Length: 306
Image (cartoon, rainbow, N blue to C red; front, side):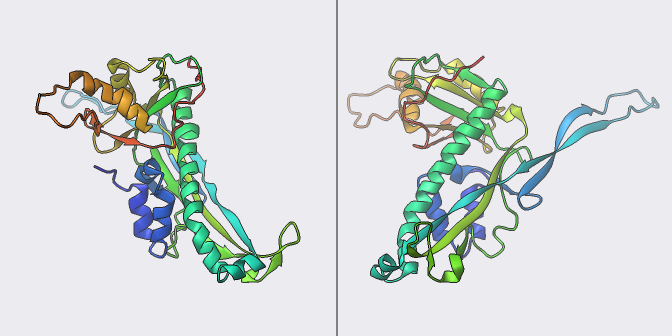
């Protein structure tokens, strides 16, 4: 199962000149690759309507006056963030690698991989979890120390809860705009060393415009047996109005194995001839589970939940 218009699908389809770079970026960022993406409305900005109130149609008797219907909305804007950086190489080191281009090509995979990991972690904590907390959709599993995990549930809805990218960004068939500094010529860096350099730049953002679709559970302390109840997990799904096909449960692999898998373990029956003990699960009530090691591995500080 995968979300329609997931970032991996969109990026590979449009980035015809850089498919390898997309793979590198998403290699260790599975949740980032699964997030639904949309074009921004205006390059570095996305303008959208937020519903304030709705006056719906009503049942009336025959020949009775029809009520006035209306939907009051407010225009809002989300700004995209810059994803990018500069890499430089000294003139002599470039020569040792067979040229600056060869040096940059060798460094690119690890740079893109770490970029994807950091970008995903920021989305998990600074976007999804922060949004759930701000809207009273983050439950407390009662962990009190700094040995905690979080679990999130996000329903992706077009125009409301979605990732954003620059609508012009893939115009040249590239996910990242790559440009040589100083026209590809040698220049002095900030320390006066002669170098060549390139810069990477792209634009991305998250639109979180409906609190009904983002929820989670924090302060999950596996070590001290402070883990969510089945009721809390079901409440998390309900708080995000989870439906199969457009909703993801997100967590660290340890949470999948030792928290969600524990429910299966308690109901698992083994026969004398059984050779495999398997507590892994892929979905919870039809909602896909995606794990990532970009969640903190049992060292989150306690989140204060009102």
